[in-house]
Image 1: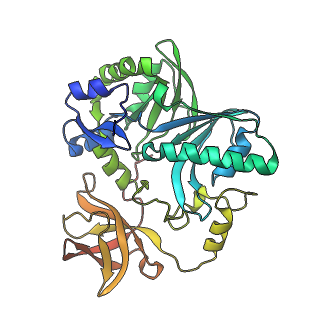
Image 2 (image 1 turned 180 degrees about the vertical axis):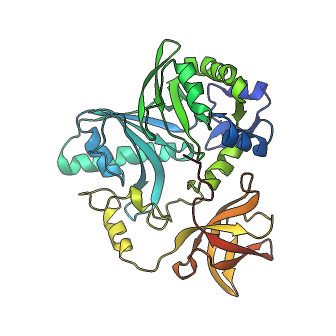
Length: 371
């Protein structure tokens, strides 16, 4: 399989990035060490190439109607510049992807999807557009995939705001979390959002491919005094796990629905209609269903995905993600547990390669930045 390359691929390779396959792309997993890059984001500012994320654009009078049918969250009440987290579900309520949707103008929306799901989601959108059109009439909406003509950079950490202010030449202090706006980079149009996947304050910037390397270099140069470092996918995973952010393929899949995943805030069952709604309404009436929980281990051993969780001889769940937290200096994990054993303070054991390790159910997130 030929891997896709971001506009920054040559930079990553020439600056010591350890490259791996991820979601069909060749991406840097780290430059120095995962712990070093993780701590840089928590204490200073880190720079990520996230151009592998899918970027779709919806335009036309029926754009909101189509997105409202595709997504679990509300779209019709978004104001210009507002961004919202939501999910794309199948008819059974299983998660096809988790997404960010933003209203650019009245009839123009952006959708950011996971790299590994982009092709699947594009095909799903086309299928559902045909289905909705056959029932309600032809939809006046154009869907464009902008992923491979644009780049996306993430600037994350406590020093992200002053750095982005300097580089973009504008003051974004008043910009609220989960909002976005048009920007200018090297005289060319761009889009900046106050979003991220690390648990820290930060921004994500979308530019045309031609601007990517120059913007990357400028951010590194201007951020040098603040301790900026390029960061790879490795610390992106440890950062999001500390912040208890679900990852598709781990906490989320077509076999998991968003109510089980603890994402009820992103599911508006009172919406008139969206794909998977009827199944989710039925599931919502089930009182005892598995719950996504946090676990802190007594030892430094790491509970990997698929590790079984027990109380005595009874298997009560399974780990979805685990790591040694650089911030907490403790092994942590997320898991799905039977509801009867999912209360904070419950003591469990995790089977790690044949040996049981004590752990305790704790509240999520593990880490929350100070305001």
